[in-house]
Each structure stands twice: as structure tokens, then as C-alpha cells.
Length: 253
Image (cartoon, rainbow, N blue to C red; front, top):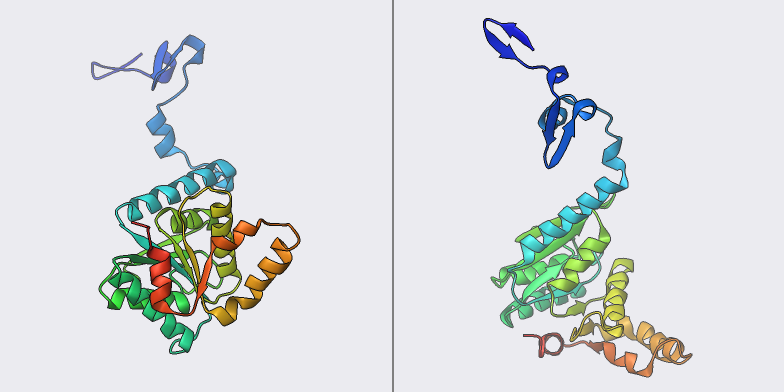
């Protein structure tokens, strides 16, 4: 103990007992400083930012933010389609009509938030006065969320984003698309097939585009016993917007 101007000053060396949160340390186990001091004063290596324990916390934070943003969304349908669909094209206008029709049926619209068919569905939903959700993903060539999104999030991790597409939607509507669209489609098919989700309608829009895939599923995959005959019932195909909306929303409330 030191004395200065009559006031006692204690140093770490004088301490024989120390509480660190719920932990008690005595005698030789006393450590210098406090937890706050070590947090605020330390300027150590930043390698921990790139280690798995920190990634787990970032993954957790994405789930928390996603759940918080979408928990009160209400009935919704996830719409998928190609980011390469050209504005003004027939497929783009189809997406706009689908977004509008879903809102008129009382549903919010969830997309990947990008351009092309996703933008079209968000545009239809937004212009119809509905809730237009965009769930983006961090990619090297990502263009950001389209202007018609009114609730948006960007994710680092595909699997967190996929969870949001399924958890907060009552069904999937799938327009012509590429690898990302196929990924979401088969993720949903697998979840329904394995009964990880119940009552989850999946509607493919655009018979000409999907015909080759559907034939392969029926005649090759199912035909060779790699899937069950009943798996043909996991999805439906249509070209009609009104029928697509009826199929994807029927019995989902």
C-alpha cells in the first residue's frame, strides 16, 4: 500500500483476494487488472476475427437478425427465378404479375432480392402495395438489393439465408432460373420429401422450361428407383398465374 497526500492507494501486488465475475481468486492466483481494463486497453493480434469460434458468433448473429426482421411478416410466399431475366421480357413481366397476384391474395413476397425475375416479383408486390422482401447474399459479383424491396437483408452465409426462405414462407413459386434457382428448388424438395417441413407447396411456373427436368425426374430418377413414385407429387407445374397462386397458397393459412 502506498500513501500520497494522506490517501491510500492499492496496487495489484497488494491484493490477496479478487473476484472476476463469479470466479474467486486468492493469493498467487490473483491476476492484474479487471476484465474491463483488459477489454479496453488490449491491442492484440486480430487473427481471432478469422477463426471458427468467431464465425459461429457471426452465424448466430445472422440468424438473430433474420428472425427479428421477419418474425412479424405474416403469410408469405418465396419466389425464385433467374437474376439474368431481362427487364421488359416476357419472363420478367410474368414475375411482376406473380408478385402482384400474391399480394392481392393476401401474401407477402420473398425473393433473393437481386435483379431479373427476383426484381420482377418484388416490383409486382411493391406496386400492389404489399410487403416486398429481399434476402440478398454476399457474392463477388453481387449487385445489391433491387429498388423494389421494402424489407431487405444481406447474408454472408447461404445456409442461413436458405433457412429464412423456408421458415417464413408457406410455399415456393419457382420461375425459370439457373444454378441458384435449382439449388433452392431441390433444397425445398428434399425438405418436403424427408418431412422436415410439412404442407409446403412447390409450384414450377413455365411448362416449356421445366419439361426436360420433370421428364428426367420421372423417367430416369424415379424410373430407376432413385426416388419414390410418390415424389412426383412434391411439386406441380403450370403456365397460368392465377392457377399458380391458387396452388401455392391453397390451405396455407
